[in-house]
Length: 113
Image (cartoon, rainbow, N blue to C red):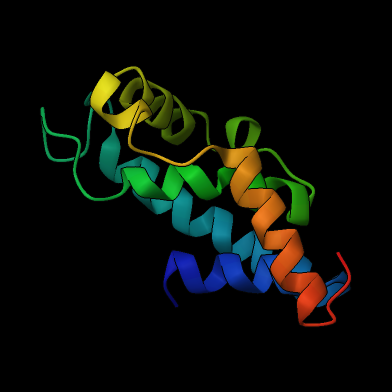
């Protein structure tokens, strides 16, 4: 299962199902963190395609009641490094705005967060 799909399960479930999804989500992030190693970015000196994922961190953390920074610090540090680039920080949506939009959509679907 891809990290985005697992994240969606974290967003939309509660209880044991959410806990299992959260564990799987953090395992996926751990694999990515292992791939990152001590490099500044994935695949050397380029940002790569994963940085838009950063915009969703707040949603995952709020819905799943966990901290990506605490659970996967190298991965989180990579995201923060990427966000220091003006081209990245100006192009990604605000995390809290994404969360508010998410809450609106869940409410419209009758799913209480």
